Length: 106
Image (tube, rainbow, N blue to C red; front, side, top):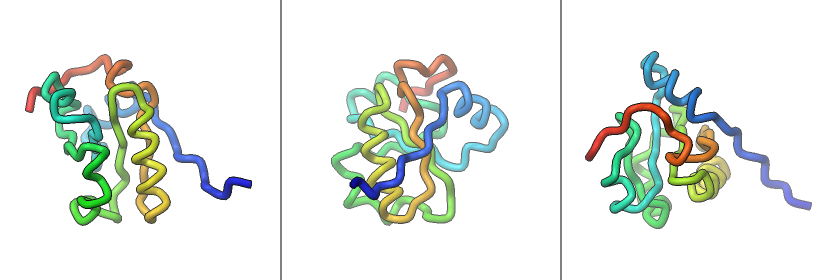
């Protein structure tokens, strides 16, 4: 039996509302550099999935983090990894493919 608890999910529309209300404490984009160069959610912090384990010290355990990637798969893995380490995370379902709000170029 799998004892891992399921990662909570959040819709892109909900993340967008939280960004607009200033209530998105932390958005972590785990896509690769060339993907992020196409645009990211304003204020998102970029840590590629492959670097996540080595950059845990950059992530505040006291905040809730919304995990983002292109489609929601890599961010789901990242969210599960972080949740297992004691972080409060939610995975943005559908990723940037379903993001309908503004993007910023890094």
